Length: 312
Figure 1: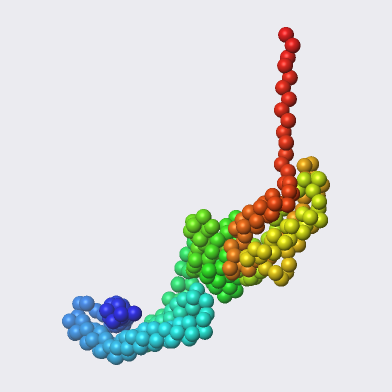
Figure 2: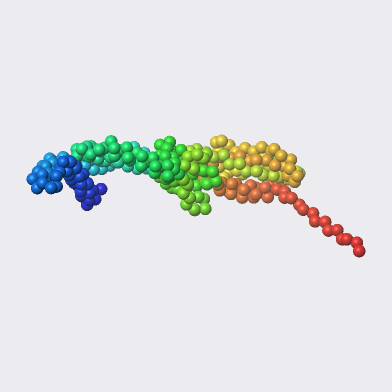
């Protein structure tokens, strides 16, 4: 907080306290004022001046206390932020705790300063409570997003840079604030998802596990040597650099289809190095070349067109 900003706040606070003091002293002096008597008016004015002079030290003390509160809040919040950054705490949690610490100290210091000038803090807080309840009810959706954002920052189901899926949205986490979560999808679109929606939907975090199992369905012709198919497929996949040796690739034949015998190939990759969504691309190319060299046929449905000529 800059010094200019602090002096602006101090000036507003001083004017507010002066208005409170003038109102209090005027009410005190006007309780039994007789405007028809000059002596009564003079006596009342002297009383107002005396009360104001008595109020002035309390006002100065309140202002000093308020300014000290601003400096203490800024210092402690920055200290807490540096400590959290050294411990490599999530940036979202760090920012949240920074603001919570700062405003908690400011609010407590403001209440203490107001008590120095005999301000009715209890009534004021009760009014703020009613106002807060009304605003919260009117802005229910926003309140839900803020609460959900706070819980997401505490629970940390994902971190910045993680690849996650929320319902129909899949992408990399760019930011998490108190209102929404921002994702960068695979087609380079930025999506802002309300935190209340994120908190109530299943979340798949693909970045939590390094190893991914990829499945690839394949079909071969009925006249194929299935043992040869198994051997060629596994040897081809094991030579690819992106495929992990442990666990080893495997395949299982499972279906006699109309035109092919179908099986599913399973292999594992390191998701931190290889993109899981494009991992099948080099595998398909390598298998197609290996099958062509080994004369293994991958069939496709054949459609026969029959034309019937009508008689005249």
